[in-house]
Amino acid sequence: MNILVLGAGGIGGYFGGRLAEAGVDVTFLVREKRKAQLDRDGLRIESQYGHASIRVRSILAPALKPGYDCVLLTCKAYDLDGAMDAIAPAIGKDTFILPELNGIAHIDQLNARFSKDRVLGGTARIAATLTPEGVVKHLNDWNFITFGEQSGVMTPRVEALAALFNKSSAVKAKAVPNVMQEMWEKVVHLATAASMTCLMRAPVGDIVRSRFGGALMLQQLEAAAAIAKHNGHAPSDAFMQSYRELLSKTDSVYGTSMLRDIERGGPIEADHVIGFMVDKAIAAGVDDTLFRIAYTHLKAYENRRAAGRL
Image (cartoon, rainbow, N blue to C red; front, side, top):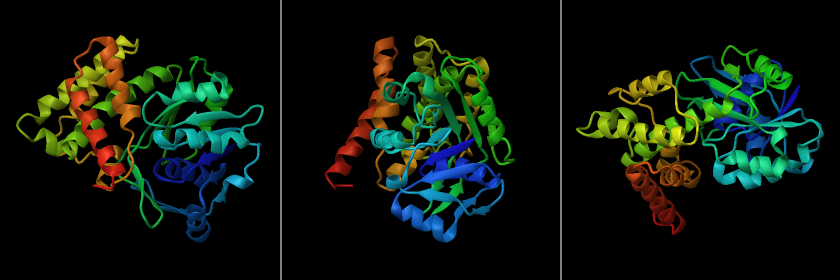
């Protein structure tokens, strides 16, 4: 199987890099500046699971042609339209797409553009970022990638892809028959953590050590779970227990990628993640007060950024 990875940032760089390190046929579709870094320095990863410097194949958009079995799509949600245009020339008769974006709203967009039978569902549980020097920096001990057919059928292509990822000891990959449930649970986690860490401009531990922070964090988690339940994907008891514990740790330094984007003055996925949950909360009749406050906070940030007033 030959794989095209869109981008070589935190997520694409880590998972695509680990595939290449394991000998899988991987090509990175990147912009000129990133290609120059990769050609000069290789793909560099810093991780507790092993540092790596890997010579990888990269191409620019004008050179892209069909011939790939799988496209690993790891863009930010606000870049999805451009990303779909970018990968379109690579899509052949049997090419399938594995999107690893935050949230779930992108699935309908990809289905409409490329057809549902080409598009897998997927989640990545990892904290990674790209440094200005071009190093993929793995920030915690999460290294999970999960995917499956939207239909729930376990197909040879998802099993084969999982086997390729699991060639690397630095990745924990799983093909599942219930990927849409997995994606909704990821939304519950992400919407809670992103809304709270961005609203408070602090990682989890700093929030829960405050007088009301821990209770507000769990209130937000329960609201997100109620939204998922209304949409037919109630989180499991094990999931809820795990995240109640994770989001209550007083010593946690866990901060979301959206918080890191704000701290560097970058664009954010306000509409795709938090705005999505506000709309779903309204439809479900769930108390969305905290989500509306967080969403307003994020949109105000976007407005200030657009006006050059950060």
